[in-house]
Length: 259
Image (cartoon, rainbow, N blue to C red; front, side, top):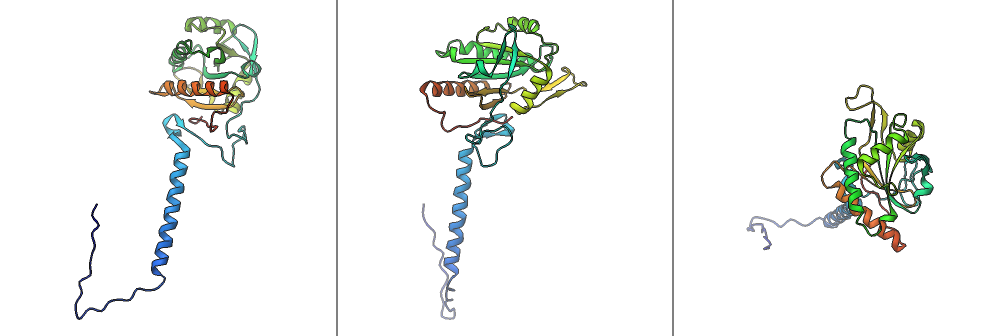
């Protein structure tokens, strides 16, 4: 690139203006401050990762000094509370049984005519892919019914049979409505509530899948009905499983997406 030099025409009647002392240093200082601020903003953006909350997932959220309720101060990740619910087999199942496992949660109800069938279909796709994973025994898929009054263990057993779910790897949980809804609202930080006027059923709920590590910390939210999100979830799950096997923290501890 060629630098262009602008010269001021000189003439016998034109006097050269003296440069005011202090102006150049002040300009240089201002430019330095702007440069530092710009560099800091770029650094924060890079630390923030890809995407953003509005795009349905993918933003890596670093822990900061101000944490919402239920978030670990040490990692900035959402820490799930301990829970015990009823699996479709009738046995008690919860955080104790999931300890040390990398798992994916989703939230449906069997009489839903909205997104639930598609969500279950995507979980079934993930289920079939993970069957080929060498560390499949370290992984669990967990479907929570948001309509536990209707979705008894017997109902969930039939639903799981329809989905061709491996009974040892893909669990279906129910309980009391208070148990399940409190866990979704206060644990996973996801919306849940009554929707008596809704066209797709009496309950509204999140359609996001949630990636959870072996310490019950949320590692990511994925709207798998959006293109590419199921693949992103699978890639992050593989990385988390590998980190747990190698005995190292998935570095740095991050959380993809937003509730």
